[in-house]
Amino acid sequence: MGAGGLASPLLLYLAAAGIGTLGIIDNDAVELSNLSRQVLYQSQHQQSQKVVVAQQQLAALNPHIKIHVYPERFTSQNAEAMVSQYDIVADCTDNFISRYWINDVCFLLDKPFVFASIAQYEGQCTIFLGKSGPCYRCLFPCTAAFTPVANCSEGGVLGVLPGMLGVIQATEIIKFILQVGESLAGRLLWIDLSNMQFREIHYAADPACELCGRQRSEHLTYPPEVCFMNCEISPQELQRRLQNKENLFLLDVRTEEEHRSYNIGGILIPLAELPRRLQELNPDLEIITYCRSGGRSMQALELLKHAGFKSVQSLAGGIMAVQQANLDFNHV
Image (cartoon, rainbow, N blue to C red):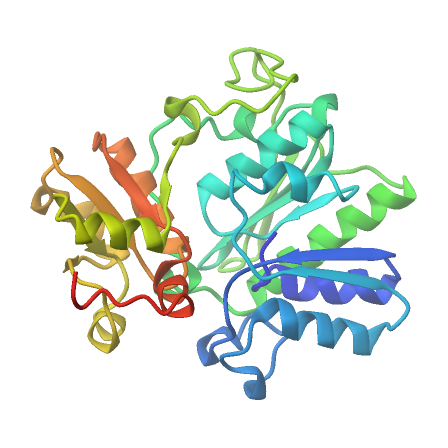
């Protein structure tokens, strides 16, 4: 899930190891700023879809494996169909909502998934074993208040950090397949490269967990307080509602440079500034957050929801989806 900094080394090592079938889902394109940490791509790949380039690169490395690519976002709508095709999931996403969706569908289908996250100099990794152990919600309850972490583009990250965490993820996957060694199940490996510290944080199943504590195993459910149900809006639906003159508040959470280059209206508050500028927003309005491809707008949605804003949606696929659909927001 995801084809960026974590996925780059992970995919290279899994392909080199001869993992029979790899599936890659991501709707983003390669940018020059990615190359310091996303080593699967090269400068000539700019503006190409990541999953397409990844498929070509991995096939060149090992032509004997199968590589399926999905140039789309991972959402609650496609989660079950996607995960059911595979034996193990690698979570290489960059927002909390996607991680909860991955956790929930993997629990439902009893699939293991290896989680990793990165920010600046720090990273974390562990593996969750479906219904056999604690889940992601046991470790990070969704109902607990948190402040979203800026993504790599805005918050910055030491380029080698995702490389290290992606290799650790690949190691856990290979160990799981071979059934050798001791996995990170029940142990969160925490790395701080600023002082080269490695720590383990032990965790266990939470009887009060929103998911596994209640053993919701018959079908997926997404209580609003747990999973932000109906949190995305399609570009087509947004255009229709704007044309109908509905009272929507558009919030661009990209950078000033990105906003000047192209926007669909609304006001600009970069994601990194949003926590200290919440007073500029009216909690009684219906807010639509948007960014380049949907990651930052999801983080903004998470922040606004936890700050008490009741009606917030994220533009699915972001500006890229608007442009790919050839929609015109200048006359709505």
